[in-house]
Image (cartoon, rainbow, N blue to C red; front, side, top):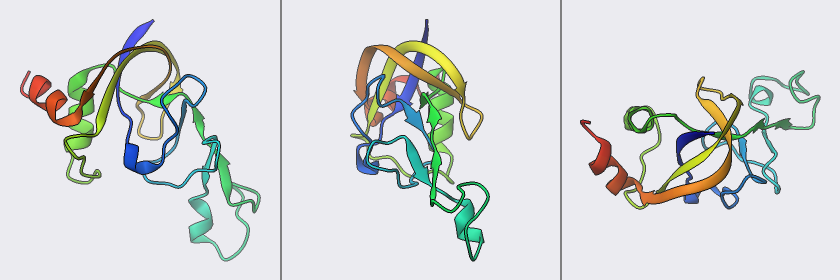
Length: 131
């Protein structure tokens, strides 16, 4: 079991943080009701059904939550000016779990076993920035 760090964005319509809901897709891409599929991005570039989704408009999400193994990796990711701005109140979840794959930005994806801590982004940033 390893420790992971994740921003679980409340404004993105994500389901509650749990092992059952642990799926990942690109940031800000709409998901289906149970969170296991995301809107097909390849359909945007075609005039008809695309090969990625077979014309359904949906693709499977990756198993596990996108996360990082070190707090500074999470900071670097979200402080990148090309990423969405996070409110200081957005929750960072520190959890123990097991890696099940690799996400769309080559980050680990993991299934949680236990939440260690939930901390607001602003407090997390103050605690770990420049460490």
